[in-house]
Structure formats: structure tokens, C-alpha cells
Image (cartoon, rainbow, N blue to C red; front, side, top):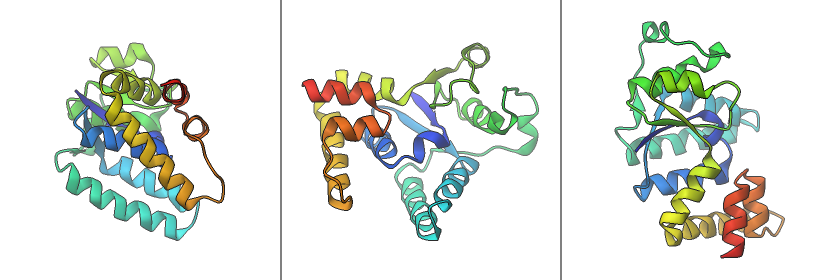
Length: 181
């Protein structure tokens, strides 16, 4: 299954680490475009130049780990697409051109299901996606979550629990499932 990762699921660190970890475990094949990676860098720039540089270096590692993930889009390929927010058309274009099955996003209002269905795409919530992967491969997802928790506790002045970390990362259902497991 090919899934295009929208910028809004790359920018929160824990969510990105969980999604990329699942992709590395071959739970799905990730896709993105150069513009999506640039939007991620610009979002990080709001937290300073160092954060933007970290994103740039992480993007290089993603390109190495997933050499087929980057979808090339010519400007004229955007013309046939429509979305409520014109600034998101490039995401839809990348998904269609890349042969994605869905777009992983938190942005429900700007990716209406009926418009995506016309392009044979689904809108995929990252929490639902990771919960589904956990139901299929609980050990792999639990290990990813534990790694994210360990990193958060190492680099934070706060002591996180799995449930609170995943809730903050907008992975509520996955956090609740892991807390009960």
C-alpha cells in the first residue's frame, strides 16, 4: 500500500518517527514530494534555524532510506486538480502521480473524501493507520512507540508516559491501546 505523507504528519516529531518507523518495517510504502519536504523545513524554521537544519538533514536520510518515495510533479500537472484550499492541490497531485492509495493527513476539511474518491484515493488518519498496523503487528508498533518514548524522556525536561506522549502526538487511540496492552 502506497501512502502519501502530508506535511502535517511529518512535522510533529513523534508522529513522524512512528510513521517512518512503520514504513521502514514495510507496513506501507511512503510517498512525498520535494514541496512537502520544503513545507516541513519551513514549519521547523518557526522554531529556529537549527530546527530547520535538523529537518534538512533528516530529509536527506529519508531520501536515502526511501529512494522511490519522492514524487516529481511538473507545474502543469496541478491544473486538473481542485481542492477547497488551493495550497493543498500539490499534495493531491503528488498522490495521484505517485500512484498512492491514500493521503495520510490530519487535515480533513481540505481533503474531502468525495474529491479523493474521484481520484481513487482515501484520506487516512495517522492514528487510525498506526492503530491498524499495531493490530496486525503489535510488537513492531510497540517497539516504535517505546523508542519514541525513550527519546522524548531523554531530550525533555518532563517525564512522559506512553499514553501522554502519544496523546500529545495526536495518536490518542494508539496511546490508549498501548496503555491497555
